[in-house]
Structure formats: structure tokens, C-alpha cells
Image 1 (cartoon, each protein chain N blue to C red):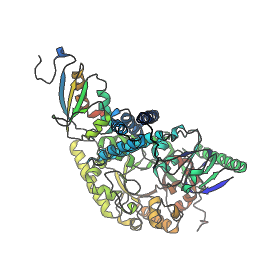
Image 2 (cartoon, one colour):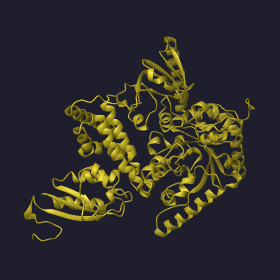
Image 3 (cartoon, rainbow over the protein chains, first blue to last red):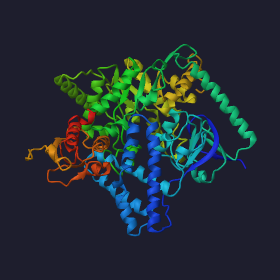
Length: 534
Length: 106
């Protein structure tokens, strides 16, 4: 019986394949066996988890490989399991003994005064979960057949990284949000993804069609639906191939207006497969994942920024300062338990509260600016004072670097426009450039949370009120000769591109996976023709 | 030769205990990656090797990443090493060296 499950499109494209469900360990409990049985069960589970992370570590590079490598080292160490075995000896079942031992270990990190050590509790939690999965015989996703459709309530990014996506496949989530980290990863690798279908995912088996264009999941599809999905997938594939073939050519609208298309990245790995000539530079670098690992490590940050500038080979590289908070907490840095974190202490607000940590990032950025054209972009700016405070910190950093004889240069200092009040008052901000963060601007302007499934349809960048703000910023940029770009998801959405260009946007920055399609969508726009929608 | 210097006597092979200390200057302290590097290096030696943040202890097995991480030594702390075994001198030299080199990370 064919069933249609509506959800939200989180990553475009069509996938069909065998359903593989990924269940969270949750409150599962084990029936207790003898002490010897329980010890053996734990030993087997740890050995299997170790084997899985060792295999994963071998397939990763950079920061991801380091994180998994650390998990390997801990799982190899008998000291990790000592107290769990002692608890089993006292009569506890293996799962409870392991949970308790790891909870103590994690608590030890949580109380540390050092941010680095506190942040490690996430690794311990991941290890704890991996071993429990083995104990309860819950399958590891790394073993999913090629082309499988993964169904889960939510998917940790590490689970996504463990799957081989080279032979297709898709993702369906019960909860989740199109703006989650895993959705970004999916878009980056062109893995079709639908989120927010509710608890229905638990009962799905057999062949599943994921329609990441319409935001729809089909279970038990008829022959007809399968044939249609295949046709659509091959048509999408054809369009994608066509777009890919012209990826390195500039993006000109039908009337000949040149639009700059840049890419959004979190690190060098995101553009490893992309020739720099294919884009006009990097329009957004998210530094959260990098900086979380190296809050006080100027050298590590400098190395990462320098790598991007070298890759870009003279093209501009825009790096956003730490945008923690909101849906991106960093243990020990962001405020815990904020009632409404999206309206709370996040982005530049938080950086200015931690000048000693902010200074490390500014130093690394100013040093990297000596290598090529680097632009610093401040997130969540609300008042001109925040921009000026940052400028003062940056000036002080430049003086220090000069005194130390350290190579450096003055980066361009610009702001993200994502707070409606800042968008309307854009003329008050003496910034070198403006970049519209369309996801947050839309969420704040429409009063509809970007991760709220029930209100997602309100959060539409094409709302005339949102477009009016974008046009206002674009006009100010054109009048004062300062670049205005748009680095949110809307820039890579074919249905939104025409409206954004008509609003005056001439530079967009999109996920590398969407670069080719975004350029093709731009080529289909005729700015000299009257706007049909108007 | 068997005096109180930091280096034990070569004639006491298998018995010698060698101690030394080094200042932890890398910014992240004995964080994930440095602690894995330290334990991997320690495991190359047959000697029993222990580490502490105070000369009076408590001492921790330098070959256990889990135990090393529990120490949570941060920048500015002094790491004390103690090794006993046939290759204790070489082990201590190598460990002090990697701490001084900031674990080759900075």
C-alpha cells in the first residue's frame, strides 16, 4: 500500500532505496544474566565499538579524524571500563554498569573549569552511545547497504559521516530541521533529505522514495510511483549534469548582468573537490566547528584560515567570527538553559562578552590576512556599537602583531544583516560590506522559528516584508558602493533567485553542492523583463 | 655513579628510576590530541612510566589516555615524570622533549 508522508524538504533531489531505521538507545534495558555473561557482553560491545570507530577514523581527514581518533584511544584503554566491570561484579547488568561508569566520567569533564576539557564530554557521550548500541544489537549505520534510505528521529552528524554516500541514498527524519548541521552536511553532499514527518518513520520498511524537492516521503510505492521517481531523478540528474558542465563559467542573467556566486564552507574539506575558478571566492566560512575545538588556539585557527586563502588563490575569503548560541551551543562558552536561545546571547553578543577568546580569533584572522584578501564578517550584529567595539579590538590586535613583528594585514570588516532592526537601520553601520543572512533574517522578520515544523511555511524568504528589507539593504550598498551579498540558503534555491536578484542582490554565496544549479538558475532570469510576480 | 642525580646508573639496568619535569606551555594543555600523542609515545617504551602535576603525586599511568585525560592538566602546569625500567632514561627524555615541543602543534 502506497502511503505519502508529508514533511519539509531539507536537501533537494530524489532517492529511492531500502529503508534502514536508526533507533536511539533511549531507555532500553537489558535482561540481566550471570556476572560472567554481563562481563562478556560488555567486552564484546566495547570491542565491536572499537572496531567501528577504528574503521571510521581511517576514512576521515582533519578535525573529524582527530575527534574519532581520540575515541579510538579511549576505547582501547582498559581504564575506561574498569569501574563498569567492578559494578558488574557487584551485581549490575552490563548496560546499567556502563551507563553509570560513563556518566561519572562525563561528569568529571563537565565540572572542569577549562573549556577544552568541558567540551570533551560530547565525545564521551558519543562513546557511551556507541557501546550501548552494540549491547542492544542496534545496527551501526556504517553497515547500511549502498543507496539505503536512512530513517531516524534525528541523526547525529557523526552518524552521517560514517555512511558511504557515494552510491546514492537519502535521509528521512521524524524531527529535525532543514537548518540543522546534518541537513547542511546532506546538502553539501547532495543527499536528498526530508525532515519532520513525525513518528511515522518508525513503522517504515521496504522501498522508500525520498522526494527532497517536494518534501515528501513515499512508502510502499506503486510501480507507477517508482517509475515516476526514476524519471524525475534522471531528469534532475540531467539538469545537474548540464549545470555541472557549465559550473566554471560565470553566471550571467539573460540580460547579461554578471552575478558573483561564492561558496559557503565550514573548512577546507568542503571545497576539496571544487576548482577555485568555479566560484568567485568564499562568501561565508562557519568557524563554529573549528573554533569549538580550538577556542584559545591561535595557531590552529590561523592554519585553517590560511588553508582557505591558499585554496582561493587570490579570490576573497569571508570568514564569520564565532557564531555560537542559538542552535549552536558550545559547552562552557554559551549560556546554558536560555529560555529562547535564538533571541539570546549569541554571535557577536557572546564574542564581545569573551574578549580574551575573541582576541585569539581576531589575531588568527589578521595574521591570515597577510596571505590574501580576507574579510571578517560579524554575525548577529544589532547595534553600530557592536561593530565599533569589534573594530577597536581589531585595531589593538593589529598594534600587538606589529609590535611582535608578526606578519599580518588589515582585513575588511563587515557585518551580517540578519536582525530586522539592523536591516532597516543599515545606513548606521559603517561596515566595509554587508552580507544578508537570509535564514535568520526570515525567521526574525516572520516571527516563525526556523526549526519549528508547525510554522515553517511562515518562514518564507519570499514574504514581501522580508524582500523589502533585503531591497533596502541592497539599495544602501549600491548607493554607498559597498558590496551586499546574501549567504543564506535562499541564494541556492532556484525558486527564490529571481526575486533576490530583482531585490538588488548581485552576489550570492551557496553551499558548494548547489553552486552549479544556482548558476543555472541565475542564467534563467531576465532582469530586463517585467516581474511577473509583481 | 649511583648517586641522587636525575639520571639513574646504567649498571642498574631494569632497576633504575628516572625523574624529570617539564612545563606545559601549549595552549590547550593535556587536551585530547596532546594526551593521545603523549600516551602513544609512552607506550613505545617498556618501562613503567607515571606522570603527575605535583612532585608529590598522585601519580598517573602515562600509558592510559583515559587516566591522563582525568588529570586535566592545563597550560602553565608542570608535568612531573617518573619512569622505572630498562629504557627509563630514553623514555623520560622523549616525554620531556614532546612536552617542550608543544606536542608539535604550535
